[in-house]
Image 1 (cartoon, one colour):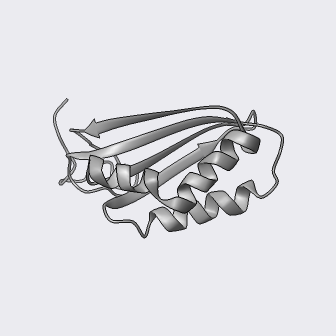
Image 2 (cartoon, helix red, strand yellow):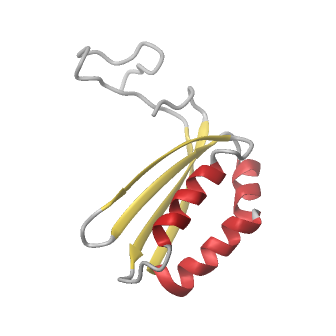
Image 3 (cartoon, one colour):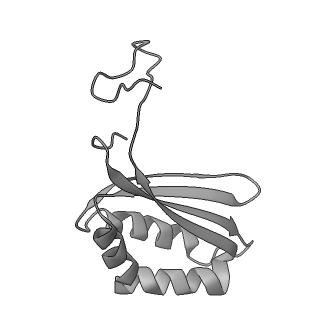
Length: 118
């Protein structure tokens, strides 16, 4: 996934799953698809370990876009289901990305548009 040049915002959602599935996978897929349709959405990355600990980072153009997504009715319903069934704990952090850079093994070089000195 490639994000635009900074600045932009990242919403970091760290969660601990319960053993209950009960539609979690379908809802998670629906939330990713729905978020992608929202104004200001830039992308998402997600990983979950065998122990149930997961981290999802979504990227957004503005704080207003993030606030609108949080208020979306289906997202609100999914959040409520998460609290009731799917998560034993979660934490959300919002941060402004001011610098970003990458390295690619195939080329051995950082992409020119993302290269910044440390």
